[in-house]
Length: 178
Image (tube, rainbow, N blue to C red):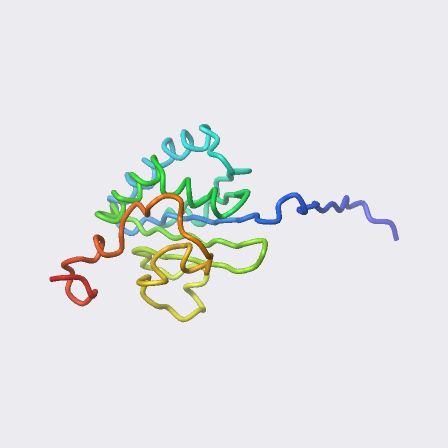
């Protein structure tokens, strides 16, 4: 029996360090609508600037009610992704978000061609992805940064947008100075 389906595949040998990252933002409160929809134009401008190492960006919708929007990005390598995430405009977005999530929850999951995965979930009121089945632990110490969670060796070329100590200093029960 002959198939009418055209099957294709891809040769990824030119991308040995490929990283695929899914990112999402879910509305947790009415105020989150403004936050989520305010990011659309910012992300579009950022993608249009063609950051070094970004191969492809795709917008996604995980649910309409409540709004849970996201994206999938393909990066040439982890260093390119990390450099972008620690530079403006992303650095500014992240610094604002960790001060006030604006009625939203945020998450990302990254998958590495050479093996390994890592994820983080901030203010997610409903479990998604790995959070639904894997043991949960605080994103502290070695688990604070994507580099640590992914067990990537070496030092980041650019400092993190927010230092762990600065984020948790003065919060009871977090190990920071009170």
